[in-house]
Each structure stands twice: as structure tokens, then as C-alpha cells.
Length: 597
Image (tube, rainbow, N blue to C red; front, side, top):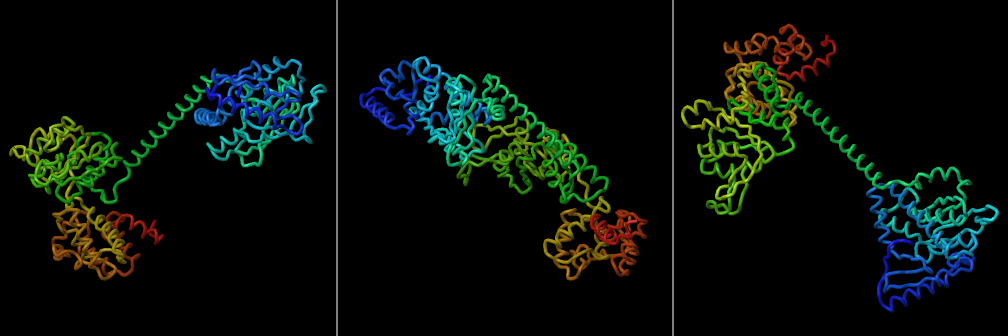
């Protein structure tokens, strides 16, 4: 490299002697035609002067620079990673072009008597001395007669530092990479020839070729190549290039953020239509609870879920979490009724080592575990007043204190609480803090008991039947008529949880292709018929007479037709009468295409 700041070894006679030996070696090594290092009688190597004590190298009175290939490789990587391949290629070609022109002008001043052909050889000679590459021309494909306007060189760069560095840093390339070499040769030859030239690399070792080949000619003789290379030599203002890149990155980031926002909105919209597979039913009270939960899910407010045990309060809490902005964070569920009063504070807020007997290590509580997520406090009415007080502080201050510690810890938690107790009555009885009740009672959702959900019990029963039949690999398809009658007549004090366990038991015990009343729990065994069936009819189930009619009909298609007739075409009742889910009914009716009309 030439005409730039110096990078060289400083200081000792031994170093100076080493450089002198290198120069002598250069003098003894040249192309058979005398064109590599000795440019037709001009011995450039003998004109080098090394002054390491001053940090300078001279070619006559023209200052030179020696720089490590690794440093230039690092510059290449920086440019490519910062600007991209296209901008980096242009910058390095222009850098080489400027160096070639500078060398050509300087050498023309120092060797005014040299011929144009000698000047043309100075560039390759300097590159050989600098360790950049050795240029080997193909004599059969090279014609140099500048006086008569002929210039065509086909050659290759031997030991190109650029190809070696690019391979080491990036591996194989899709394009030639000897950018500074091509730029230098273009700038130097244009000056020496007195006309515009172009250098095009046709093969490159960085692409896996055997050699780094190039062609040099007048630009007018290579119009297509010149047009293709021209953008690389157009001077660009680097700050403008960088600003353009920054603007492009900013636009891409804005587009990415906008895309993410749209995806998030679509996911939220889709989530509002998507319901958990265990949320089966369409009774008015159940749909109202689900609608309220869905509408407040994205609002970071406390939700209080009321309802009897087994109605699906935790399922509703998960529904709220999965549709909230916290859905990618933790959902932590705690059954407060299962916590002994002496351990409530430790479980909720954590404890320090040695806080009590057995506290062998510091432990985080569920509030910390749910940080940035949702904490579901089931049966919150069973907590002690002390625990209630600390929960209120955690909600108001957004911080907790571990048992046995003095310092507080910040927490960001959304609370969904649930209870089967009458909290208002507990407030009147001073067993539940009034201020905590109002803090929790921002949004209230009441899950209705199963006995008030009409035909939902039949849809749920059919859903559980399909699930457990698949789980236990049993060929069950439906509930018997007496089993459906019992399900419709029973009050289900344990609600959906009790129904689920009843159907699971029935599937396990069933011996045929249907679950019968005998397979269900004893609580239902006396409800297969009788006067209690009126409640089933009122809630959309089947009467004993209807069950009897259906039971006496052989064949699935005929039973579907009869159910349609008895229900006046109400497919909700048809599904309930046959003990199927709506999806199963649709699938079976699809099977018998004549039933679709």
C-alpha cells in the first residue's frame, strides 16, 4: 500500500538488515520477461530506503507504507458487515483506484524519462514488492503497443492477499473479491496509458477457481463490462451512504413493528373467537360469563370469578390469561384452601434462609414466580386475615417482602381470584377484609352451576365421552338412553368436574359400544326414568317417552330421523337426545347426506 499512514517495525539494526535482505530477494526474483519487479530496466527494489527509527519507508523521495494483510482483512470485514457487499466492493475499488492513480503520478514525476510501457509495469512491480500479489501475464493473450493505441492484457494475480483474507473471513464467495487489486490496476493503467482503462476479474480463488484471473483493456473496447463496473467507481459521500443505510434499517424496523402489531391484533381477534375445548355450552348464563371474561382479558384489571366448586373457575382464569397481554409469561395457580394458615405467608411471598425451622435456603413465593404474568388465587376466601392484609399491600404497592427479610421486592402481577363463598357476607362478619374485597371486585364473572345450564350438560357429556374413549382406546360412540335420562335428571352438585369424573368412570367400565346407566356412579343409578324426568324436559333434555321411542329404533340413520322428528328439526335438541356433541351430530348427518336438507 502507498501514500497512507505508516504501519511498520521500529528500531533495531537487525530489523533494518532483515528489510535489506528482503529487498535483495526481490531484486533476484522477477518474471522471465523482466516485467514483474524490474520494470524494463528500472530496479524499484534498489530504490527503497527503510528508516524504522523514524517510522518511514521511501521509494526515492516517495513515502511508502507496509501494512499487515490481517489488518486489511479486518477493514474488509468491517466494511462488508457495516455497508454490505455492494457498498463495500465499491469503496474498496475506489480506494484501490485512488492508490493506483497516486502511485502512477508520483512515479511519473520521479521517473520522467520512463516510457509509457515502463510506467505500465511500475504498478505490478510495486505490488510484488509490497506483498500484495504477483502479477503473471499470459504472453500469448497480451498485446501492449501504447504508441499505436493497443492495450490488452490477460493475466492472473498470484497469491492475492484479498482472496486469501476473504476466504479466511467469509469462506467461498459468489463473486470475485480482489477489489482493491482491480481498482489499483484500473487507476494505474489509466494514468500510464493516458486513456481510460478497465480491469475486470473473471475468475477468483475465493470463488473456488484455480487462479484469480483478470482482463485489462481500454474502456472503449469493453463497453458492457465498463457499464457494469462503472457504479463501483462513482464517488459516494460516506455519511450519506451510512445515513441511507440507517434510514433503510429504520424503515425495515418500522415495517417489522407494524407487521408484529398487525399479527398481534389478528391473534387477539382470533383469540376472541377461539374458546378452550373444555368450554362447551351455549346456555345464556354461561355465554354471558365467557363474553365478560373475553372482553376484559386484554385490560390489565383484577378479575374476581364467583361460582360453585367444579364450575370451571380456573379454566376461566386461564382463558383470561391466554387472551391477555401477559399470555407469553407465567400463569401461576394457587389453591388457597390447601394452604395451612401457618404456611400461607411463606407460600405467597417467599421466605429467607432461617426464617423458620426447615427454611434451609431462600425461596421465592408465588407472587415473585408470577412476575409479569398472571396469579390465580383460587378459594381466596379461605385465606387468613394476615395473609389478606399482605395481599392487599402487594396489590396496592406492587411489592412483596419475604418472610424473615427486611427489604421489599417489586412485583408486577395480574390477579385473578376465585371463590365459592359469599365474600360480601364474610365482609359483614369481619372474616374478609372489606378493602381487599373492593380491590378484587373490579371485574366480577359468575360461573353458573351445571344444573342451570340446560342442554350444556349433554354436550359436555358427549365431549368427555369422545375424549376418554380416545384416551382409553375404547370403541364407544354414545350414551345409552337411560344414561342420558339420568344425566338430565341429576342435580350435579359437583358441577362440570363431577360430570367429567362420572363419564370417565363410565368409559372405563363400559363393556359394549355405549355407556349405560349401570356404568355411571351410584348417585345416578335411580334416575333413569320416573317423574324426575320433567326437569330434563324443561332444560332441553329428553323425556322418558322420547328415550323409549329412540331406544326401540334400530340403526343410526333411523334414530337421527326420529330425533329430528321429535325435536321439530331443532338440532341442539337432537344432539342432546342422542348424547352427542354438535360436531358429532353434524359429522353423522354429513355421513347420511339425505339428512342435510
